[in-house]
Length: 137
Image (cartoon, rainbow, N blue to C red):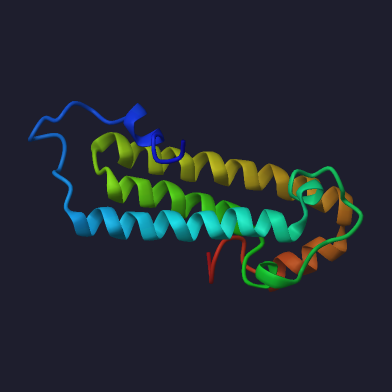
């Protein structure tokens, strides 16, 4: 299903609107999508599905990938969106990337408010030590 998603926003094959795909862009895009899947779904499975969906909030997880990013599932989601956009480049795919960045960021901001309410100072200390997404960002 994930690979069928781009077809929902791709325009007709107009030469001025849609760049022809090369095999290298398809392979590169597939690698990025695969990295995103491993990061997102691997994190969810290692984290535990109850915690991944906010059903269990007994402790703050700071191990594994959560030492590098506070939101590895979101980073993985961005990799998937960007990878599909590399595979199927168009103006629509660029809009999809921008929209996903905005929506995911707003989601993270609301989640952080909740985590501050639940964990208080522990989460604030964690937020100072670990970047929201990756590296300095």
